[in-house]
Length: 403
Image 1 (tube, helix red, strand yellow):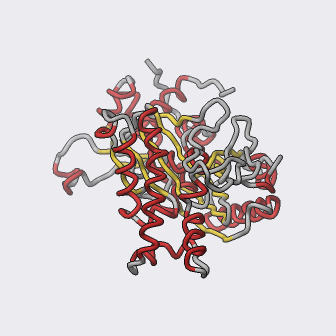
Image 2 (cartoon, helix red, strand yellow):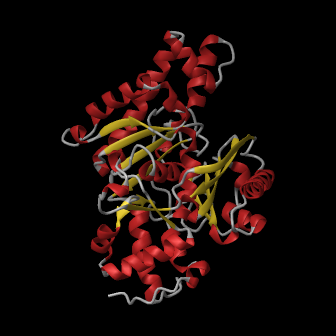
Image 3 (cartoon, helix red, strand yellow):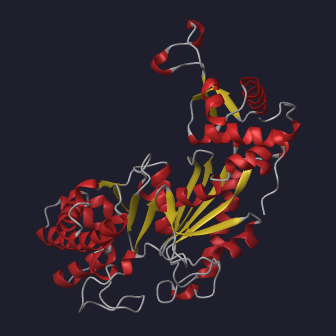
């Protein structure tokens, strides 16, 4: 249960939330947004500037200096006002980033590991990387809000993994609890597709779009669905698992146990396997962009087939959720239009016709950092309340009442 706030904290929260939602907001705009009096806003802002939470920009849009008499100086929260750690646990890597208030990494490292069969070794590595980040950046403990963890597995609403067959060695493991015990940081767990959706929605291609789908095309395939500005998780936290939609009736058995799942035909691993079988030589997923650039007709055909299968799966989401935007992320996004063209074509053929012109398909802006930044963003979402109630803020002596 959240701790009740007093009147001063409520006033700070209104101001901080407004600045968190929209950097560069002026004092008069804060009065309108918060409903507080001009005197209260001025006093709160002055105290938060003195505390180092808020700064005033002396240069206005267009380069004018405040000395020229232009009104309404823009105010912003300092990026150093609060931090969160993100930990991204994939099938073959661990990535840790320490992010400032705006989700910008100030420390970001990745380690390649065999994750699926080594849960405890992986968690030990993640904890060691987290400690490395904190030592390197000297973040004051009171400004570190916690740890967000994303993982390449379905995550149930109770924090358990739906890892049967997907990350078989992780059955019964609760990563957030394990990392909280190892680091002492309060931890939250989320699926990697959902983490990517949060990051692209707040920081990337989905900024300003309240209805979008983020598709992660990597060793696993998943999607995060944002509806009316909120992440759609489903009853058990399993919404968006499009990698396990059947697209090939007589296809391969998937690691989830079903046959012909999208992941078995359209992941980078599956595409590389088809080419390796055809050519009789090893092909790695990382080779695919280079093969396309080199004019390989075989690579082009298999990638376009994969795009068509992905588009069929996404057509169902377009019909069901009517998104404004589909953001293509993950490793396979690097191949660009050779993949996105067939995706668009399949959606146009198979989605509800009236929904097709309403959706735009774009490449993710955040690249491989989307998931780790999205994991951290879950923690940063509570930054306004935490800053308003931070012990250091108790030294502020604003006595104005909140209307």
